[in-house]
Length: 319
Length: 145
Image (cartoon, each protein chain N blue to C red):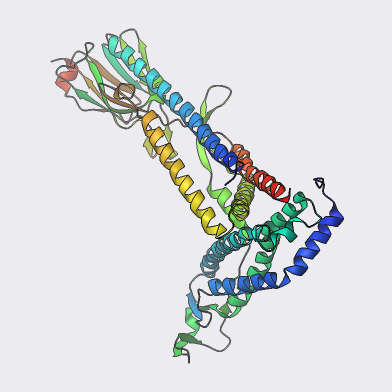
C-alpha cells in the first residue's frame, strides 16, 4: 500500500496530468460560467438597455452595488455546487475509476487536488469571470443620466425606448465595486447590545460586534462546508450526486428541526407558578449572550469532519 | 452510505445536544431569576406595609385604589414586571420604597411600564421625583376618609 505522504513534485505531476486530460471539460465549464454570469448580470436580456434618470448619483451606484454583490455570491454557490459534485466523478465512474485510483499518487494528494479545484480554482475563476463580464455589461447595459439632459424619448429597432440626450450630456455607468465589502457591512450592521456589570457593580450597556475577523471566518467556514458537503455527495453517490446530496441533507435537517421542536416544546413550557404571582406576570429581559461571537469559530469542526470522512472514503477506495 | 457516514450523523447529533445543553442552561438561569423575583414579591406581600414611597425613578407605575385585596397586607401588583428590577423594591420597617430602574433607548420609554399597584385605603402612597408614577385612586381613599 502506498504511504500517505505528500510529495510536491508528484502533486505537481498529478495536477498537470489532471488539467491536461480535462482541459476540454474545464474550457466548457469556463464557457458556461461566462455565459451564465453574463446572462444573470444582464438580467437575462443583454439586448435591452436600461436607462435611469439620476437625482442623486450615489443612490444609483449603491443600488447596483447591492445587485452585483448578490449575483456574485449567488453564482459562486451555484458554480461551487457543480464543481464539488463532479470532483470525484472519475473515482465513481465504472470506466475511469481504475485509472484514477491506480494513479501513482497518494490519496491525500488526490484529495488535495480535488479540494483545490472545488474551492480555490473555482473561486479565482469566478472572480476573474465575474469582474470582466460585469464590467462589460455595465459599460453598455446600464446607463444613468441627468433628467435635465433629456430632450425626448426615442424607440429603438428592437422595441425598447431610450432617452435622447443633449450633446455632451454627462452619463454614468455603474461600477461593480468591491463585492467583498459585504463582510464589513455585515459586521457593522450586526452589532447588538447587552448589559454588563463593570467592576463596581454598575450595569452598563455595551455594544458587541461580529468583528470582520469573525465574519470572514464564518464566510470561509460556510464556503468550505458547502463545498465539502457536495464533495461528500460526489464520493458517496454514483449518479445524481448533487440531487441526492440535497435530498439526504434536506430530509435529515427537516428531521433534526422536527426533533428540536418536539423536545423543545416538552422541556421549555414555563409552568404558570413559575411566571405569575396572583395577577403579576414576571418576565426576563436580561439575555446572557456572550460578549464575543468568536466561539462560533468552533464550528470549523463541521467542514473538517466532512473532509476527514471524504479522505477516509477515498483511502478505502484506493485500497 | 458507509460506516463513516454515521460519524456525520453523530456530529450533527452532538451539535444538537450542545445546542440543547446551552439552551437548557439559559432557560434554567431565566427560571432561577424569575423564581427569585417571585420570592421577593412574596416577601413584600407578607410584610405589613403602611406607606409606599416611589423615589428617584422613571418607572411608569399606576397606583389604583382597591376596596379589598386578596392579600392580607392590603397591596397587590398586577400587569407585568421585569424580574431584573425586583431589587428596586426595598422594605424598611413598614415602608415599601421603590427607587431606581433607569431609562434605556435615550429615555424614550421606561423599562418598567406595565405595572399596576392596587392599594387599600389604609396604605399611604408618596412620590418623590417619580414623574411617571400615576396615582389614580381618589384623594378620599388616600386620606382614609
